Image (cartoon, rainbow, N blue to C red; front, side, top):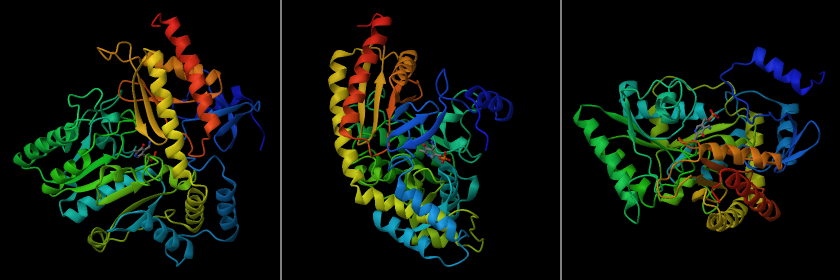
Length: 440
Ligand code: PMP
């Protein structure tokens, strides 16, 4: 393999990759190696990666790499043969979930997982694909043609076609920008969903599923207020819908206090979809559901997925679980997350740009505003903060429908010294951006 200069990569990319694929940063990064929390560019410069929630147990974790390589040397087939890894992995995954979630379907991406969850709902409810689906405003569930309509983040955004007729869009349970605050906010948001569901039923719609990220990612790192999901599930189930928890971003110990983010809301979904972190960068994803739903899906049509659950993927998945447990990474997410939250809150006392600080574990958001009264979003400033941090060797991204939320979702191996560095550097960069904007 010949190595290419950065400008040659850029030229080839422009010629042969689609223009709808974006590159991060004004000056793109040319990354060639990853280790732990750090990415290295062609010049050997290290960047602390606070973006990559996929390389959950650290970039290129040697145990995960070794498990995949060992299995690749031995055998890679599909799930039509018996293999110890895939059944052991299913057993281990099921053990992390509350009963009655115990049957695992293996796929390769989060989008595939959500598409399959939708099919499970269509089949298990008997309502078929003409039925409606409830989603939350701001949600993203994947890039497939079945999922863009379930993703307001996409269908409402640039180039999006708007809401499809079969989609019921419930308000984002956002206690910062939304209308409801205080101890009853969860119930109030859920009851708004209930009202929309009841109206759809009156129009004669049948509802197969309610999809929700347990904490919203692309929606801007939003944690629904307490009691929200339990009541929203009640409304959805009363209408006959299955409740799908999309844990593609937030599952697997990231929220620190719990292994699954839906557990923070005291619910047990009917279907859980997993992706990104479970393969630590290897394309592994899954749908976990109940025996009853899996049985209803077995209506005669075979489920087969060429790559899903192959022995190499299963070996990788097992190694990721081992590392998570043995290195105590869920506890680390809780501790480092608490330090970051406390640090952001104290930065908010000095930096008027910070409007809100939120999240759990290592899934955190800092929302930037130009004015704390009007909540005017500071999207351009958020972009400047991201570029400023990059200059200091820290990678971060923005998200949310207003593009003004700094989104923290690093590998769970982030350490205390790195937390201090992040807080000190963010302090400097915010000071600079505020000075330029004369906000300080
Ligand atoms: N669900 C959520 C919550 C996601 O954040 C994503 C990816 N950003 C997906 C589903 C889709 O996953 P994938 O890109 O692996 O298809």
